[in-house]
Amino acid sequence: MKTVLIVDDELDIVDAVKAILEEERYRVVTCGNGREALKCLQESKPDLAILDIMMPVMNGYETLKAIRQRPDFEALPILIMSAIPPKVKPQEYTWAGYLKKPFSLRELLKQVHSLAPKDQDQEEPA
Image (cartoon, rainbow, N blue to C red; front, top):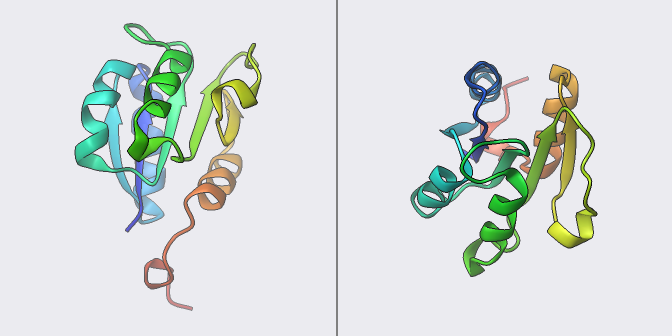
């Protein structure tokens, strides 16, 4: 089972995305800010991280840079989300995708399935 780390201070969004991804058979770990996310990275070992940009304590860009400084996570796919378009280039921060809030269920699942494909044994039976 693939693990997705969701980092956002908006609990409604966290709860909704968590419920959707668990329904899709992902293991979901949630954190309310970047500092919390850095603490739980090692134990959760996510296959994908979804980061909000505008958060207290550490914003998404700061969190992303801190994640990339950890050798075990420099290749971790990171999906950023925000109500406003990113003001920095993806090459500088190496994120894998962007979701503009509010986003559709279809767009969320398209990005997640692309960045953290489910294992064959995790697929729904036909």
